[in-house]
Image (cartoon, rainbow, N blue to C red; front, side):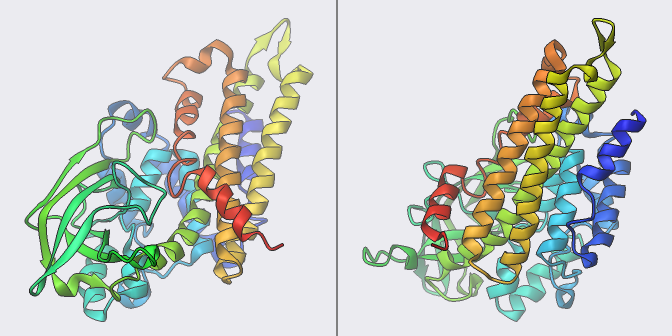
Length: 393
């Protein structure tokens, strides 16, 4: 890596916008990514295998499940600390970073709304690195329409019986339990009050999961297709109160979308680093490629995309943390940052020319990865609906 690349890599995701209390975790994530993720990222991308060894190292480094509160064994990282971690890990590799993040995905819902015994039994093993969890919301026929899900839970004595399917569920195979969103009512006048959240152990009778076939990006992260066939769980596995599931998710996704903004920022920074190094080290027509004004303008535009998105995302993190029109700011951050990543990856491909299509080159991996965050945690078209409806006008 050239001196110029090393300089820009430090500045692109600098600490200037980051609150002081998040500096330490940001530096820890940066060092971990350099030591444990970057050296194996290409290998895991090619194989598509689950990165158990990196996840174990991340657990030992204190970077897994640390959003869980100290009372339950975690470090109680807040939204800004999770964002600081995300942008550093995703710059190194999106698939491995998502695996690390998904190790405790959905646990926040149990911590915020569950009973103390649920937190004791389910959160502590996740915080200790002894168990993995997941969040089961999306279905084969719908992802963004939370009031259109059909997986249903019905009461039968002292049990809930769940039937339906879930799709795109991170750790659906690997997890020890999932927080699952299911329909428990049928009131046409209250679509949003018909859903509840449940803790579903993956060894429960009637729970069947298999990996979704390989994806074009995020290959080191595994998603599952889950079939629930008369899956029985104890009635006390209901999280919070019946009918509150939609509102729990809405709150959860406001935080999650800001962190997904960090996914986009990390990927955008990776694209800029790759393009910067390539054009400074390559010659054409008797000079290095970076001396052409058209190339300089592309690199300038990439930095405009990243830095404007990063400013908005960190501002949004503060607004959401303070519960100031959270849905609006979360949607802005998620949409802007993930689309900045797409813009930077596209320009990075152009600057690499014919070599951009070689799978051995990191830019081609980044280019495929950036297509995915614009879809998950609510597709960006849905985010635009939220921005319009919740605009402070």
